[in-house]
Amino acid sequence: MASAKYFHDDHAEHILQAKFGTRAIHAGQHPDPVTGAVIPPLSLSTTFKQHSAGEHNGFDYSRSGNPSRHAFETAVAALEGAKYGLAFSSGSATTATIVSSLPAGSHIVSVNDVYGGTYRYFTKVASVLGVEVTFVDLADAANVASVIRPNTKLVWVETPTNPTLRLVDIKAVAEIAHKHNTKLVVDNTFMSPFFQNPLSLGADIVVHSVTKYINGHSDVVMGVAVTSNEEIYTKLAFLQNSIGAVPSAFDCFLANRGLKTLHLRMRQHALSAQAIAEALEASPRVENVIYPGLPSHPQHDLAKRQQKGFGGMISFRIKGDLATANAFLRHVKFFTLAESLGGVESLCELPATMTHGSVSAEDRATLGITENLIRLSVGIEDTEDLVADVLAALEAAVKL
Ligand SMILES: *Cc1c(COP(=O)(O)O)cnc(C)c1O
Image 1 (cartoon, protein in one colour):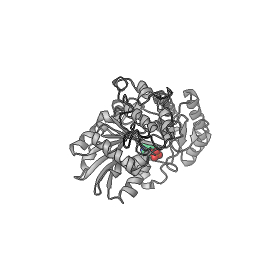
Image 2: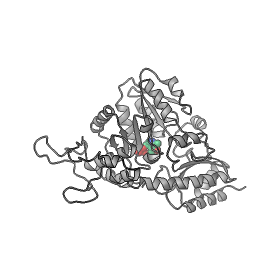
Image 3: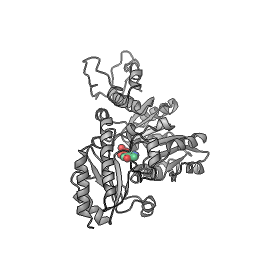
Image 4: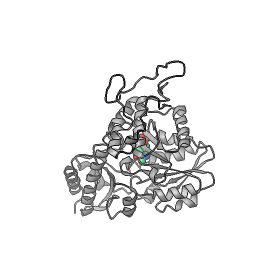
């Protein structure tokens, strides 16, 4: 584990007290003490010279701690208002490591439309490890209380959910979880630290798929967990080293570069998403639009209260069927038909046959993942081009 010896001003008050963009640029970033390089160099070495046996500058072996990883972990922690950050080789490895911290016989309560990979891990892997998971609709936070058991160790929440952008009241769930002596984990991938900080609402751990908004350039697969609870941090740091699902120094370097523009990107993602959502809602070729920034969203008030913005993800039902949806996806010019989200480039996809193709038809029906439901990850191209692209593709796909 990296000690504070080398990075003596990691938690400098003037950085932690600064606004988001300032923290994004400065937290964890130190000019190289030898060369003066302003950008901390990419640290590829797997091992670190010791002054005398067991005495070193805070790093001994790169799985246990690496300067590029440490810089990234410090930066994300500062953006989430957390004391500690731990990076992993993917968002999924982050989930797996957190579940590994639970003793066999533990129970987890999870929101029902959790990320597909998390659902797969909970049902196919955690169950084998002796950890049972109950899925519950958390549109009403009070539902948590009815499924919590004496052995419930974690409540796992994602908000907004994917792809139907349902919100969960983090503060209300945290209060119930804590009353039952249970910890709350929030997957904050969709909002990024710029638009939502679950620790300030009572969550104990926040996780991100860095692959999405934090890196933001669709060229790194990585995950991160942050917490201000020292006991949780110590346990997860031990498992990060013991299990070893750590990201490469190169990926940490890239993701750290990405997060320096997170605030600029998120503002633009949200600006364009709002404009596109409004244009879609006004179109006679659209059945309905799901975007937390629209007053028509059933939880618009909660979104305004709990989030600092509405994000860059939109789902909408095109007027028509699977063929109509496919025609739209073929006609857009600036939205690439692909899975994933959160990059600078706009993406579109059909959840029913792509990201949520492995969800049973019955569960898809329950969750509202119909064959005419299209998900957009709005990039940071110029707003007018994106709005025009969506409207033109609608016109080509839906004959009135
Ligand atoms: C992508 C994603 C994950 C998984 O992250 P990977 O980096 O792909 O392993 C977890 N949660 C959410 C909400 C995601 O979008």
